[in-house]
Image (tube, rainbow, N blue to C red; front, top):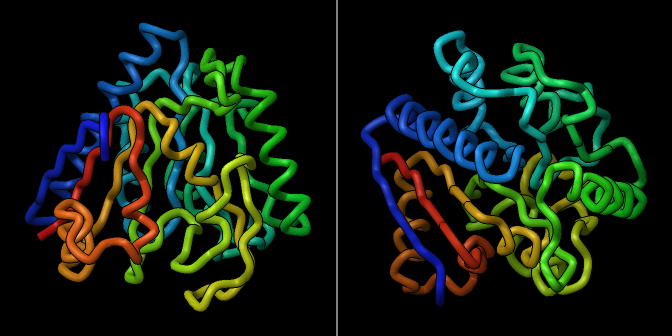
Length: 246
């Protein structure tokens, strides 16, 4: 993880983790808006971040964020309609987006209802079209620079929809990939941001709950038998944080 600043934090409960993470999101958003006029936030799917999104939507927290300056993106999506129970967008919408005042033009969802390859191309275009709008021009490699990417951790060490052995792990050119249905539930094709995009973010934060995931996180931190875990390939150029429950 050369040139990457890595911070780890362990919490006794998910609620304690969420409270700390929410405070840091507020600080990260304030800094980005002050420096660049906007804040780009990439949301994670899965069950663990849902309670964090619910906390962000509470009156005491949501009034401290300037939602008019925040653009929402997704790290991955299941190839299902937006109103499907398995949709990452629906989870975030139910828990957070439907409860805050944010312009719909600043909610950039992955269209899981499209044929997967078409959905990947569509989202790549969305990212390219909104990069300057968010005041985050790409690097010399033409990659977007998101302010904050939230990631989960699977029991097999996957993150976003980058699964062990997936061809998407070797992608160097594309911003978004279509991924065949994995063994994990729900067994449907996925869309995912690629490693070059994730590693170009200003901040990447993993949120993991449970002792098993904590053990995977420890292996990745120590670089001990972690080579098979896709999450170990998340090495952003700047800041990496791990939030893990005991």
